Structures are given as C-alpha cells and as structure tokens.
Image 1: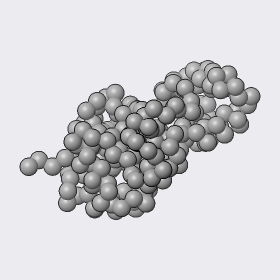
Image 2: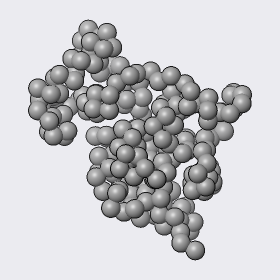
Image 3: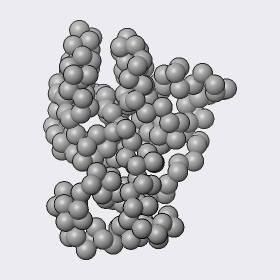
Image 4: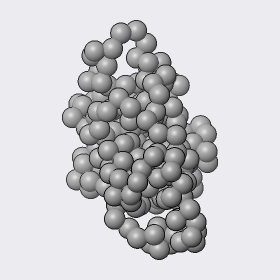
Length: 212
C-alpha cells in the first residue's frame, strides 16, 4: 500500500527531527523546511499529500504559506502544529483551508491521528483547544470573525516589517518596488486607524499576522 507523502515545516530543527523520526514508520516524509517562503517555492514539485507546518516561521508565516499552497495545491491537506493556542489564529487557519490544528505539547501520536483524519477528508483539532467549547467545534472555529481584513500581500508586507526588515529589504523579498511596499504600509495604517509605523508593527506582533 502506498504511504502518504508528508512535508514538515518548522524553524526549530530539533523538533522537526523528532517528529520526522516519529512519523517515518507511518508515512513517507519527503522533505523538511525551515521557512514559509522556501516551503511554498519547493513543495509543489514534491507532490505532498499532507503538509505539517508551524504558524510562526521566518520570512513567510505558516498562515500565509498555507494560503498560497492551497492555491497551488488545492488537494493538499494542511495541519498546523504550533505553540499558538489563540482561537482567532486557529479560526484563521481553518478559514484558509486547514484540515488540522494541534499544539506542540500534544502527544506525538495525536499528530499521526490528525494526519490520518486529514487523509480521510476529515478535520481535526486538538482537545486542548476545545475543552470549553460546545457543539461542533470545527464549525465554531470557522465561523469566528478574524481580527483583520488585510489582503494577502498586505499581510506579507506586515510580516516582514514586523521582523525588523527595512522597506527596501521587504521589496527585495517580495520582488516589488520600495514604493509599492510604502503604498501597502500606509494603506494598512489608514485601514487599521494606526498613527505610526510603531503602532503598525505592534499590531502585527499582537495579531495572527506574526504569530509565535
């Protein structure tokens, strides 16, 4: 029987190695990545069935990477494995097409179960996130309103600015002009009613845009 092809994406190498060793007897782990941009660039050629990824990754976070991957690989299953237990982040993940959401202190066996559920076209969320919820918790998460209405490009710009990169560096990473970056920056400030660059960065750090 053909084993499912799995990609792991997390910037904590030790954790990736641990989960890779645990998953290999059950699935074919075809690659690991440490940042979202490299994941989006290289994953399509590997034809993965499931991608297990963190929310907080450098250059491009997991939510943005996941959204891009679902556009490129609509049939791929995304499972988020993260330290972030913010319900709004989980809601955003499911809204963008996630099949599963686990926290890193979940048992490793739970990840195997979540992958198998995703392969059966079912959704899974760790009980650590749902113990206080009533009814269909997946639908509860999907119905939650997100805290921002920024476009994908705006979120990419904000992620990089919040990492401390200059507008010129952001422009280089996104292959646009610094003027375009400035346009997005000031459009976000106006849209979010923020008065300074510092407030914008603070917003990015506090929201699911730049999640840990």
